[in-house]
Image (tube, rainbow over all chains, first blue to last red; front, side, top):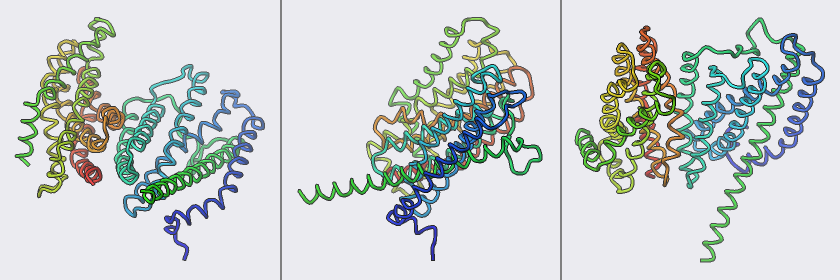
Length: 245
Length: 218
């Protein structure tokens, strides 16, 4: 019986993830390079936006990841609170800086894109503002992890912060919408809408999104495994010191 | 619970600093703004609701770390945790004490400072109303942040980093009530949202605060 909870065992988790890591990394590299090259060189320019539209292939996936990584952290935090699996807490910890970087990438590429299109680097638009707030949430979360020495305490506190933060991040999202109507276009990719981005742009974008997701998975695996090894090393050192004394 | 409230209030008033400090900070921030943006009355009255809200929020932030830190250091928080009063109740009472010593004075002082900022006369009632409804939310959210960082030495800066993003929705709706009021528009929608956030936070956050306090006392 293969249950998902078997991977709560760090040994089992490391064995499995290390077996799939090369494949995931290779696929991530392939998708990213393939998708970006396809998007940059083999799609036509937009008839209004010209070649600036191509930043889309980085902007959209990174923005999607920025939000989804927070959701992943929420889920792993819940798993930690409910079932006390250390791997889960470590995965949340490993994901946070990646999420923060994704948020910065989304904001930065958005600014670079916004300059020629809207004539401004920054506008207090609901989407931009909520991303900035999301970035602050990531910073607080990372800072709280860094500030507490005891691992389990840190995992508990950050998990609760993640839960409360999620509620307030969602509230902020709607509050900001209410506060200012924006320049940003609505969602350009969705599964249920009739009108979508044209297929020529849509397929390379999908490949890029897949690449970003795979890259995230690979990074989380590496970072989680590093953290498990670091903990083992600390435990061994502590034991050795105890034996000497 | 009432005994705990009375004790916290007495401590806040007698220990000095905490009680008047927030209020003086509120005053100073509001006085500094005209120096920064210039004394033009039209501009001041336009930004008055926002400035007053941001200043109140910062003043609230200033005294947050006192909510649990002192009790944590001298061990009375451990006693509270083992007392028959549930820790959730203690967390709520502490937040209430913080509001009575910081939030309520801010609400009462706001009209005087609004005068300095040249707020239009129809803006006074909405400003007070929004602060009255919004500052309790600031106190309970802040109490949660204080509970999170209680075990950390010099956690004040971290506390601000954690709490300020959580303040965003309250600030948006609160300042919007005050702004619409000052411009003579209808402000029922943001007022409802503000009340919703406040009551929601009051109902739920003491549980989160108690949970993290238990972790910190472990």
